[in-house]
Image (cartoon, rainbow, N blue to C red; front, side, top):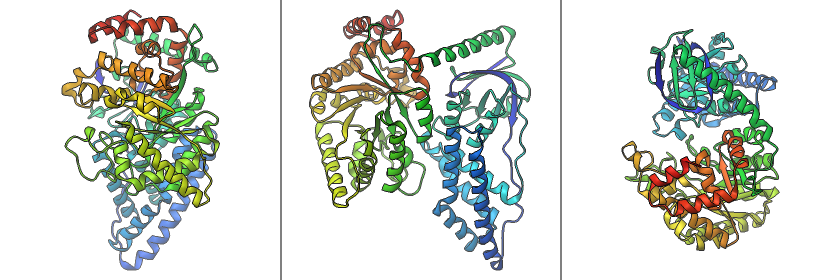
Length: 567
């Protein structure tokens, strides 16, 4: 028995046989052309693009595809229709005299390489989509269709990487799980896997050298590990866990329509955090009470040109309409720090987490900020969009942001463009200075949302991405809890609600503490929502308040941990 540890990007347990899927290598024998062939290659390019788009449209019409996979296929069409892509291919043919297939290989190799070299999962997460499009297009041009690997309903797929279309294809073949050498939780492949409840693990260098086809494996997406040829005792234990998982998921579906409230009828609002629009279907399945955090960084991080107002407007409008009448809280761009953008942050900062990020970046790029604000105002026709500003450190920044909103609204009136005259404003509380002055900030806002990841990082002076100081990062440090309580009290004193949208909101054992501290809303990933709802349904608000009162008096992390263990 061998045990390997990696990263879980889709939770769950799977037991089955190894099926190794190797990346298809296209044989491009014709690399160069002469000048007389240029026109022929350009005509071929237009023809094949049109045919591949038609093929994608045919796939979209098939009933076995989920909404998530259809959205991904739409994204692939957008890549194929991108004028920058078309212009680059034509330039490679006309100027470099590359054959059509070689030009396509050159273009996608360069784009995928750029993504993979970015030292951040949010940047590199879209490479699988471009790889998928490249393989689809090259296979069509070269007439080298990928073989449909035979998947039995007990197979677990192992591969270097996996494309979104492959996740969908293998799902229809009843695959039990995916294990890949590299991948990101933000990738479309991971999002589809989560929406289909298929366990998926990643971050296993040289994975394919460690396994053989048809070996029995256990894939544990809860703990981030897989086990090769488990012994009988381990296999029996995981079979039991798998049955418990199936039973638990079936039981959770029974509470979808229940109101989220404690045993003593205290209501908590449960909302969803999303990264990209493709997650909306999962949000609606779980009957989320809205989107508590829509991160807009995806619009800026995987491209060479900035998104125009019209593009942003269409995306925000579609999400707002999909969720109506439930609220959609759009956080303005929070690139910077651990989410650097090659467009917005061309200069590497010595300490980016304390540098030009969040609202500071928006103020530094006011024209870009106004484009985003205008798009949000125009999309808010139904009135269910709220706007939230990240990394607020003082009330002056909120007032400055509100002044820019006013400018944008006046411009839209002058231009006679339809928009909502009023929009609710919120601040992210992630910096100790914001928590300590939340009484003043609350007077300028309609709601507050506590980002516990950064609040912990900045309060304890711990880089949460630095393994050397990882032991110092603890969200239940007394100082962090005191700042959360201060923020809640100040917000309530000023008649506004407070949410938590950081990792604390998704940590089961911390839910009684957060509710006892007085949190009104929790915003978590859609897949976690029903699990938290069940926890809240089983809680006593009175006892949670007593727990919070006791913890607020404690001096050390160890005391708090001990208390939470016995809840």
